[in-house]
Length: 564
Image (cartoon, rainbow, N blue to C red; front, side, top):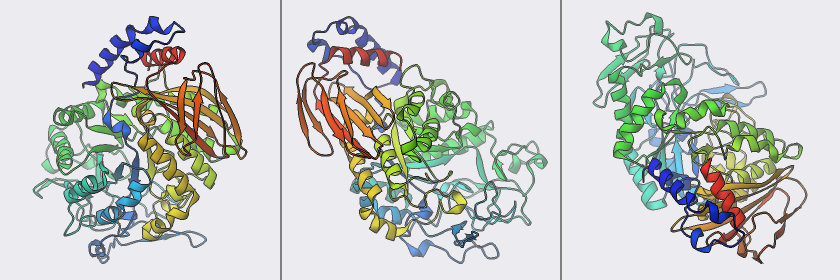
């Protein structure tokens, strides 16, 4: 259903029950009619495992091309730190077959979708321009290869390092979906191509863009942006004549041919099996472009989900992308990510109350806070520098709070924690780490809470009602009530090193409650409480099935839904 129509129908339904909610009697007939849900977007039910494909697992050594690049090699390219530490600026062998071979590993952790870095074809040499990248460095591209996929030369062609002779991109997405029930999130780019100027000598691929038929349609020709002549040179017309990010080409989003080229490529990858898009550097392209892209995509695929990377910690700023007039694109929740680091890197010194202002459950700037993609680290920032308990607490929060959780490969075992991109954050994860993951405390706890979310609709799209966020303790409800699902989840979190007692009296519903991790049960009488003790660095999720039978809770949910 159209989101606007859904909102209108919900508002009409809610208007009929406000008066009923002021009564202390159980509104039994009304309660079954009203729809209460944080979002009806289908993708909100997913949880996402994020893979830098080249750095995950080498499933096919035949596509490594270790001798590629000649004088400008692309294989491994180690960067050595002061104490012998290593990071890498070249290809390391990971590919689509490596993901597919480990689909059960991802599925068993409770994930339902895999977000991959771009599959686009990238140049076949390391970049000889710019300043050389060094161990621990940033914002320099010299000496790096396009292993990450963000330096596209052809937005319609898969990179030869990722596919195999017996596994195309479409083969991969089909098998992931049909054999393992895993959706595919494709990473797309709108603002840039490859590094395009400052080369010592012009290199094949860099600054060049080819169309779906392999024809050259744009070439920066190793010229600085200010030296381009887009009005008189057709090969320059794809680019702005001013720089944006480092030495990357700055695509001219106002050129209709560029818009058709890029949006056409997005539609092509949907035809190859993309179930959703993550949009790289979304804030570097005007809203008008994403509005057109969204309209063209959703005219063919109405429920297609997209979320953007606006690397900014101001909720009011990043929320602009979520508005219908700007394309209704969700975003990665950077404001909450910042608080997550502050809370979980030092869990014994911090307060759950720090999250209150970034949840934006009511009167917030977002079109819908329940559709935000939530995370605590990724490939573009330092890994969370936390203890095992810090990671466990972060996952307990991430998989129960509002939003769609995203976990970066390796963080399920605390891989290379505390390191930035060129310190090891993007180092090769590999089969050995995967095979040993089951013995890791972080992995075990993540698997448990992730699978609880996977089986609990209230945690996927239920309205969140906070009871307590204070010190080391947090308690909140997630409630969903539709024509097919009526469920209430009570989440209890303890990030302290001591057991924590909880006695929940507010909004408690009478009936049978079951804790999802242990199977413990409580039969709660009318006006009684839920009492329990949560272990150190632990979580409990108590679930009651059936329609809401507490009038005060119903009133609170209606109130929040009106001002969400």
